[in-house]
Structures are given as structure tokens and as C-alpha cells.
Length: 130
Length: 107
Image (cartoon, rainbow over all chains, first blue to last red; front, top):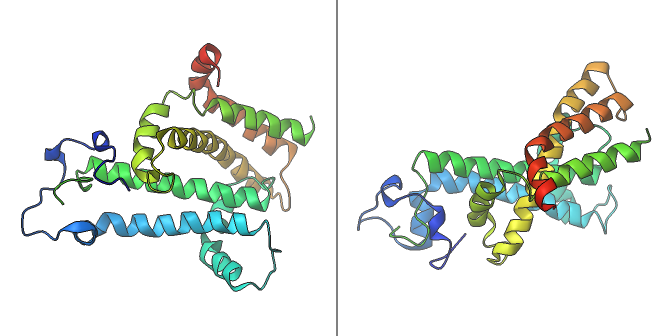
């Protein structure tokens, strides 16, 4: 996420952003708590997205049936997403391609989430008062 | 047509849907805050990743009707020639809006 020197021009006019007052919590934690309804689903999607990428990277070094605990954790976490993506992907796609497609699906889910919250004026001001 | 030819065609039309895509700029602008941290705040890097996401999205979207067709005909283990053909045509159709920019500027 952009800091104070980040791309402020990306965000709508101040009036479109939820107003904050002096009583609001300050700092990153305060921003997270104030806008949990955006950050929470975004965080879950980001965790899944990067775990899928980690699974694809780890598959270069481990067998599919490896008992490595990190591999098993990655598989357990990402299997539901990958099976859902597999339903809308042609069978010609190799497993690693399916994993990378899942990564892209999750990216677009985060993108759509950002668009939806931005359109509703619920996005926090990056580097702003909150 | 061999399967590799289908894959090359799908990848080619997917590539057209990257940087030359007419929706590249808004996608890039909204991708900036999403990938600002993971990509070290480099706008050039983020632009290339945004183009990659657009290209892959075209390939993925075009694959949906092909996957539905495979379920409809009951393909078990692998795609059929017809489903790959659907995938290729779908990717080509999605590349039409970007074809003008592609022919004018290249990739």
C-alpha cells in the first residue's frame, strides 16, 4: 500500500472519501480498524493470492505428494480456490498453469473489490487524515 | 491443427490484450495501489504486471466457454480439439478491441 509519498492522484476527491474526525484512531492500525470492511476481505484475498504464487514457486522444488509441512499447508489453504478455478478452466491447462490462473483470478477479485468500494466512496484516503 | 498451434494462437491473442488494450490505462491506475508495496513502488514494473494481468484475464475469460463445453460433452481427462478451438476463437474475439493499437504501435 502506498505511503505518504504514494500515488494520491488515484483516489477520488476528498468528498468521496469517508470523512474522519479528530476522534478517529490514528496510524496504520487505526486506518485498518476504521476501514476493516475493506481491509479484511482484501487481506484474505491477498493471503490466498500470494499463497497460490508460493505454491507455484514451491512446486519447482517439491513433488506433488511431498510431505513438507509448508507445502501441505499451502495446498490445504489454496485447494478450494484452485478447484473452483478448475471448473471454469479447460482441462488442457497444466496444474501449474491452473495455479497461476488462480493467482490472476484472485488479483481481479481484489481489483473488483477496490473498484466497488471506491465507487461507494468507502475507500480510505492513502496518506491522508485517517 | 496440432495442440501446440492452438496454444501459440491463444498466447498470441492474449499478448495483444496486454499493453495495446484500450482499458490498459485505467487498469494500470487501479493496479498501482494494489501492487505498490509488493513491486517496490516501481510504476514501470507495475505497468508490465498490469499488462500481464490483462493478457491473462483475456485467456482465462475465453477459456470459460471452452470449459463449459467440455463439461457439456463430458470430456474427462483432457480438452478436445473443438474446445481448444472455442478457446482460440474466444481469445481472438476478446483481442479485437486491442487490435487497432496493436497494429499501430505493436506490443
